[in-house]
Amino acid sequence: MSEAPKDGERGDVTSGQSRLFLVRFRRFQNIVRNIVLRTRTTSSIQHVTTGEWKMIKTIILSMCLAASSVSLNARAQDERQYTEGPVTEVSYLQVEYGHFEEYIDWLNSTWKPTMEATKKAGLIIDYKVFQLTPKSPDQPNIILWITFKNAAAALDKSVELDAVAKKVICSTECQNKARVGRNEYRKVLGTEYIRELILK
Image (tube, rainbow, N blue to C red; front, side, top):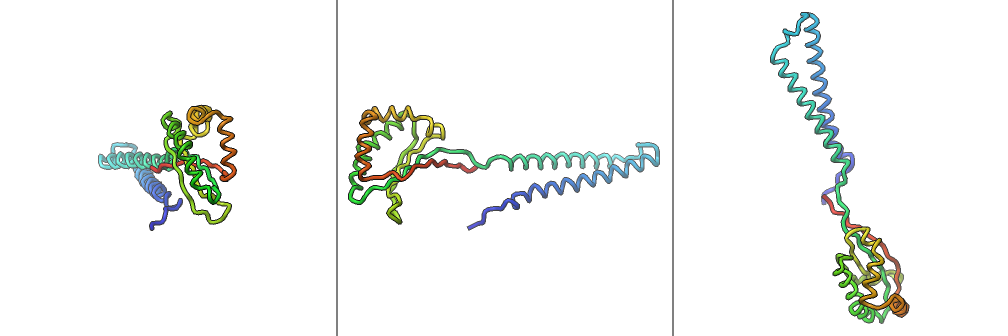
């Protein structure tokens, strides 16, 4: 298994290009200094040969390219190397022993039709149910997974989501009464939001 690159390794390319830029710049300084000294001695710039002018132009061009490359690499390192993907609401539940099939029946008869209607309305993009093997009595054995397009859809669409639930199931009061009944054999341990990061 390959080891992930460390921060110092990521900077090796840019630092190497910077050193190359400095070397070329010093070469250019030395050539110009020699030409200036010759010009002062002869009081004429005509003694600067065509080859020397070509060399100066070549070095200037190389310096410009090196500076541009360093700048582009530095800018690229500042950019995020991922894009933000969908947001998933993850609910952790604990269903008491002997009531697992009863809860699955409720998921099939009520929760799934509601999720399908919500998906059809464009409010979510996916939903899933997971069964876990808890290591201790205080851990969940069911996870409900609802995926939204983004954080705004997950956090700011409660009115639209409630409207779909009322249409598919029943009124809010009716849903609350049914929820109290389910609380006798299942416990909601917590809910969190996770965001997918899409690597470039």
